[in-house]
Length: 353
Image: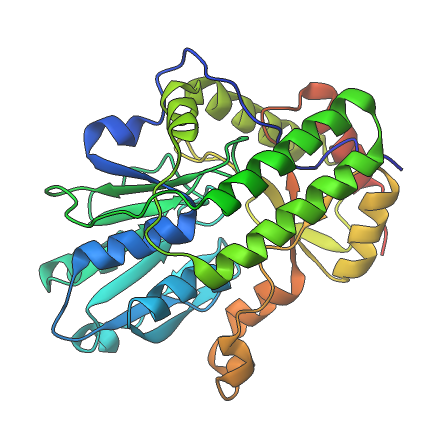
């Protein structure tokens, strides 16, 4: 069945919005990807007395690759599945120079008192905003991530420095990567216009070829001028409103929950959902059921490589282990309206494991 909900964004047009609010408030860089933005932030941070970062056990391997490339040893903290809340340990404060932070799927549920204690000890806080680009965290020294999960843009990396200006020198955009991104979005647009699913298949082939290549060669690469213009002129105010409305519609529309639970079952005033995320008892079964009804779902993320080499990962990080094995996410973005959200809610209501 052709997807009713889900799929890659086509390229956005230059708009007349006010752009991402944080970009005007602090010194900022536009980069080729989120990992480029994170790596550039780590380079700008420079040498520290000890290159040891405290990072989440539930994360994307591309996030960790930026730390590895910058020469950091990693310590991990667990994530409580209830609200995806970091489980910080006080005893590490004497052993780290950087805290890596994430607000999952647009819901920031971390302990700001711990961030303050890091700040008081001159431990740098780097906030990965790929899931939470609208959160202004005053205790973060850097906020870096990608906007590609939020809109159709080829180079989605942004990095923000709250105090002072960036001193890192950026590389020019890498042509082969950028060509691949634009080609994938062009094919996606052709698929939407023609209804021909072959264009979609080709779009994903190009996308993943480009993505996997980036993982082997990323660096502090700048983004291109068109991507920067799109981000600077996008109507994020309308995006935020639409995503919140869509999420709320799904929450209110689900009449019965069986075989899964909702990760975030309420919206706070500052939440901006990236997806509708759920924990499934049998994830393969639920995803197959959704696909049969034209709803695409995604797993963010596959287990990080460290989970294969850290002894007793499931024992050390039981919360992260549970999330890796049970979470899946559904798009509820600005492309969709009330009908699609009511449809999603009805399909979830009808699921029975």
